Length: 121
Length: 451
Image: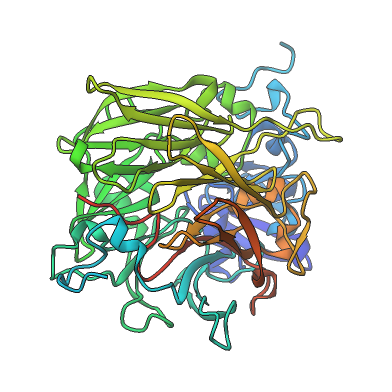
């Protein structure tokens, strides 16, 4: 089993050893981290956390648009760690997750992956 | 009130209007998306003005899990089985739209203190039917169908879950979804063998929040569908286009002989009316158009976002909420082709017309409404959906939602916010929660259908 170390910055930098092959939500909840979640298939955004350092594979997620991904958001219910990672978790990490679409529209390259244009177009 | 029959509900809409006044209200309240790691719950609210606990939450039933996002709910039985003495309006089916869990709540044994009767696990529903994201619950005689907005992975169009009266999964209700792209609300009118369904979006699109730009990419609905109700398949689609962006709440006249019905197009902020003409053809038209309002600080004018509509039991008045503007409107639809605005009140909203009502800061706007059977009291809540709340009204995290009551003049038209009724969900014991749909034990204006 490949193990990664996950640090939760906004929980006093608590660290957890997790299986690199398991979704982070399951690994962290199994070790007693109280995390919000909803659909558990990567579609509903409830479990979003902000990646401060490290790399994840979250190809299965369909909830985030490109702006949210660029802002570091990760859907924990489907994301697996590719390296040691540091996160902020919970709604305290959601400061950039939600935006008023009438106040702050997305650019075409900031849409979800299936409809976004590339930035140079 | 007719006492000759033992089944639930009433013999007719006119009989329903004579029912005793509602004494308690059931309203869901959510912590999903708030940062408070507690289950969503069903509140019982005292609506008896002679009671010492009037306008207060008198009991709370927590769901077993966290993160359900309770949203809409429905009765196990309504006036559609009034002739069936073996049936009883006893259970609320309370779905979790994110978890797909269905909570069956016994409200009949002790109406002031409902208890959890059964949970149908979301995983079982997904495994047996490939459906998720339950929304509208209607009973059909003794059986129950629920619109499910996605497949098990949150893709559109989903379908309809069929439960029997013992709350066992029968399977998929519909024979076919035809070319329907999205699901949301539905209502049926059996004497015309018709059901009408509307369109929100795929769960994977609307659950994370509202990207306005996705509307132009056809990720949100703009059609309504007429079904052959007996064959359980769609037979005609109305393409509403720009007039009908995101058609949500569907209401037929309560009069079972009428073919007239209405849907609120949330983003276009229009009311669409349909009916069957003298030649037997179904027609539609736009009858109400709420203008977008400029906002001093925003590049894009604010649409009303009609999140709900409702018809009074006598089908005379149509109520709608503009969740982003902050107003509730009452229209006289005695002539359904020519609605007349007869009342308007303001609470919350983004235009700053009524930031505080009855001493409570209103965060959010008028959202779900429920009308008393006699048409005189309209109960209003302010939260739409956790992620959308977080986008448009982020202060709701700390302020919570609230419930208000509007007194409606059924003789001359007109509305007035009742000064003595307010339930502040910002003061809930576990912290600020958000209130959504409301129902009454004796039936209400969005549950009862006559066959």
